[in-house]
Amino acid sequence: MYQSRETGLAERVVRINQPIHEDNANWIMMELVALDQQETDDSIRVEIRCDGGSVYGGLGIYDVMRQCRSTIMTVGYQVSGIAALLLAAGTRGYRVLDPMGLVTLVPLMQGASGVEGVLVQREVTRLEKRILDGLYACTNLTPESLPALREWTLQPHEAIQLGLADQIMAGGGNGGGHPSGG
Image (tube, rainbow, N blue to C red):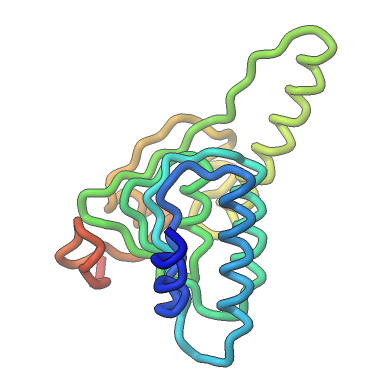
């Protein structure tokens, strides 16, 4: 794993290919910062094959991506949950989807009751607002078109219409394709 991570960094590629949790989110954030500090005009490629995970970790990655000076090309294969926000956070014009890929938006889970439930609900509401604000900033979505997170599975052309991505990868499916107009 370390060698592939090292090779990816040499190629300016960051791979998110498992659910996000605090440990891998920290690695991803460090990789993005390190690549952004390099003296080059080359873009950073973030490949996303992820079904979500930690909202806190994902929001941390989102914040770092938005602060990077480098162009960030996001490439989505199967993207769900908080990873959908990361796909959208790439530089406009450089957000690419695999032709067979799906993007799924999902609401945050709830479940506690009593006093703890009130506190949990407040935190869920706060996190959902941050995610929605990020989606509004990065896409064509508005508070009128998506007032709350809901389960919504999008085909590549639908994700492009909503502004989560800009184009469909030509010859995709194995990560070896290249962007084409969508």
